[in-house]
Image (tube, rainbow, N blue to C red; front, side, top):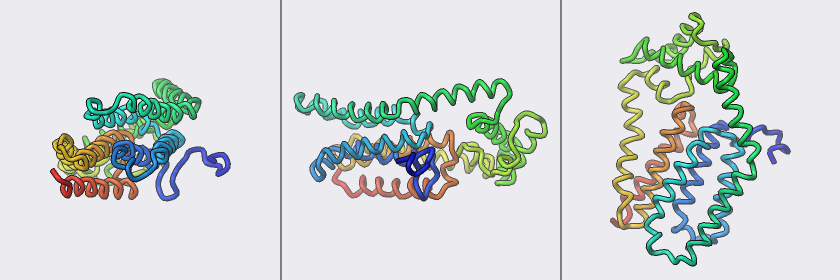
Length: 280
């Protein structure tokens, strides 16, 4: 399909490729966490197919930041279903486990060559960067992160705004500490939400950003052991959302893009309301 559409990477029509991969992974995680609830309303084969297609979308998007989060997502899912281990029928548990492992393995193996090539690209980009060549995706990110740190040093308390980010890049470029192309220097983003927020708006905005992730995360963690199934499921979905964005923000300015802003905002509200309207 990607060849037919002449697309080097799978992406959405209304979102950036990286954000497409991130959101696809989170949606896949939500389906996995809601499996127990969905199986009574939707044929199980459809649930499994949706999980498979979700992982395929993440892999074909070639979003390495999302790939890194996959083991942590699986850990969250395993933690969510740990309460079933004592009650589930062993005869049913084995085939279900095999099906899920097959789904995940099929998703990974179907794009094994692509994954290995993307990993090799990272290694090669790091080697090139150490040799002084920063004109690679990884090298450009490293230089932008350095410029973000420089912008923070210029105005750590109140931030320098978008122009402050550009000035930080120009300063390090002039000192030959980084080597960013002219068009990248004019970008008002440093591909890291934490550095981006602090550099533009100061340390108080940076603390507010952490609160935006950590306060909901703490709330959902407190709710995840409640006896009500809906509360527990919604809480684990909320934990997945918050931890996912904590990871994604390391390599992307997620709140500079409309799709990821809206997704986080509405999902937080939805999962919070689910925990509050359910029986506790």
